[in-house]
Length: 68
Image (cartoon, rainbow, N blue to C red):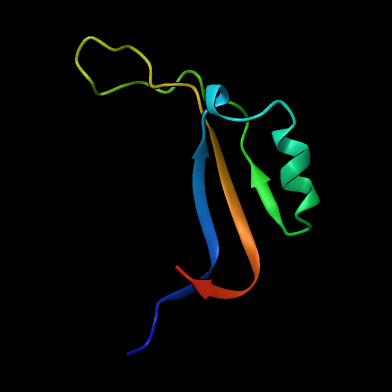
């Protein structure tokens, strides 16, 4: 049975959950990575909540296909 493999991954980072030097740590990995500006004005669909929790979008490209 073939395992699903990929090179491109996306994830979110929340400011309250990451260390102060998070961007340097990601850079030291030595792989292509893209980080969005802080998203702190995204409209929420949740009743009683105006905006979504502040976050960064990250795209990570691994050197070789890896098992997802």
